[in-house]
Image 1 (cartoon, one colour):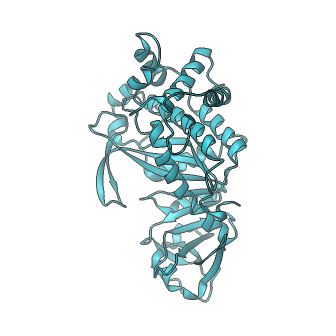
Image 2 (cartoon, rainbow, N blue to C red):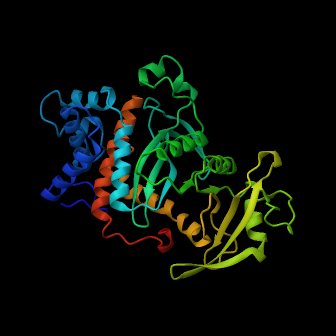
Image 3 (tube, rainbow, N blue to C red):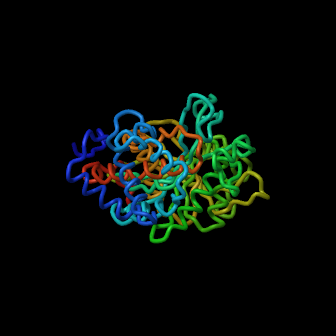
Length: 388
């Protein structure tokens, strides 16, 4: 059975799939110093693609020969000293060369868990659901085109309880890892991906609930990263009077600004589809916070009375049609996460090891790439303007 986006888990590997995995293995696992490690990495990815059901270490080990297979797989993932970041860099470089991505997309993922023993499990309040969920909260950085998305880097949000002794030592959490907010995870992810050699450094599209969008926008401006960041409709903003001197500067919500400034609305053609959009130069609500150089962007779909999602953009991304095209890319990430990542086991690691979680999601990202390579030739582009 060929790998496909409809059914990414293969019951067996045909010659084409084997050739693809051999090619990926040669490109992605060159940083693993020993041939045995490279072989185990390739076999682990094969297990993620072929093993039915949940992709636990035990289920993946069942494909390996020998009675000590489970112990061997557990050691390779949770205790072996190989570094995952060089593999992620090679993954990004391969995607850059073969799938022509348009942008980075950063999104958060909630991984519900039963019990509290898996690494990073805590109670997290999810604003869009208005409820608290027990599980892991991860931030993923994806390289995305108008047709497909591939995860490259992952950040696991950790609370203080995971960083206290002796839990920290048992989980193998490095000394430099500290308790972080979602904003910190986003900053760390963007810093990591913009440092990858031979890979485009922007723009970055951030679609994460519960973040301080103006603060992130200011940060990206300070480090020279072009950005599109989703902003909460209730976020307090001011019109930038250096750009629009005839308008007042009282603090209003992002939703109010986007809806009330009718004279700034314009028609934008996205492919063959016209839509109404608005672009408003804004600053943060508190004057001391700064934040010039941001533009609030909203769009109206069909006959909607209110705009859809609202975004802050900056760093020289022009024209407005390109910005609106970039805002569609998170939908491709959501689609491919459900169609590919979830099925190759990105959420299935249940161990307590911090390095083990990172190695598992890295190899699951490699399995995702294998499926994406098979499907990218036949998938329609989600949005014509997503291509720059």
